[in-house]
Image (tube, rainbow, N blue to C red; front, side):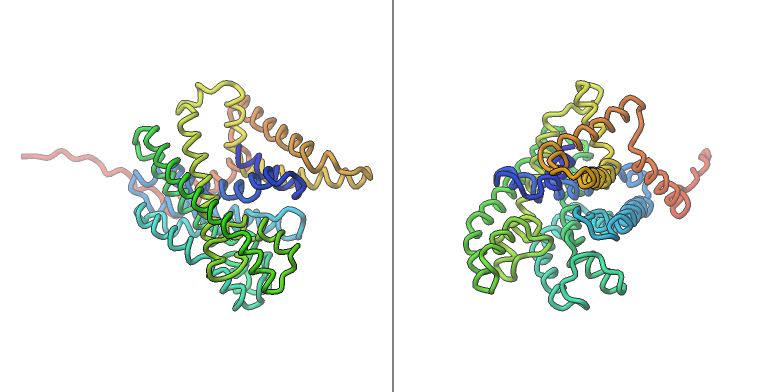
Length: 380
């Protein structure tokens, strides 16, 4: 729910808020979704893994990713105000399915390697790609489609895959059976160190980043805007792709800063929230139910945003109740309304239910469980 609230704020403030507020809601919510996506993959496949069905576990994650990517491509086919993230998220999940069987230490090494190499691969793809720096999914050719999804889109799958690798490691720690306080500390402390390193790197390098952009021909006004939002790409090669931590750039410092904060929040919630959800007070249960239906609420937010915008246009109003705090309050109350309904009916989100049903069907068809072998008595 924290990630959902942050997403509402980033979309509805439209950059019109105090710098301190924008610093909190820009970049962090989407990263938290990606990290939690990796953690969810670990949790949702643990039964299959423990049952000795790793192929079924990988298939379940891949099918889930394919379904989410398809929804994202359909809804994002028309360029609108909100950048549809689901297509990139889905393809990152498909990539995660390919490495689901790797040991945790290998996943950590891969995440570290991509944190360093990923920004340079994005810049390389933008410089040498078939159609240059394509920012939105292109259907002109399979090559251009993969280029935009993996490297040059607003939320490059290579960056989100890195976040999901970190989340997968975190999720494995959660289901490891270790004491809850130890797991929380194992997430909180490294996450805090990552955040501090990325934050300091961003602050100390920001002036030099702006000067470099201006020296390369970017106007000072544009340079200042870019260090607030990179729209999916590093602001430059070399040290810029390493030290600059501008939001939505996917640089090494940006990944450390945002993924680190996601781990801090994850660890803090593990320490603060009881394991048994039945012990939560009623508001906590409602929030938990809303948070358990992120895809449903994301889609409702997507359509709700444009519904309110259309009403504002038709009513010839200023749209104050669409954007800003009023809009955030409307979307938050709607999300809590969904959570209340799911709690009262003891259901999951409808889209989550549908996708889980399709995933189970695919797993049962292509990776069915082996029938239990009949027991035989040993004779002397």
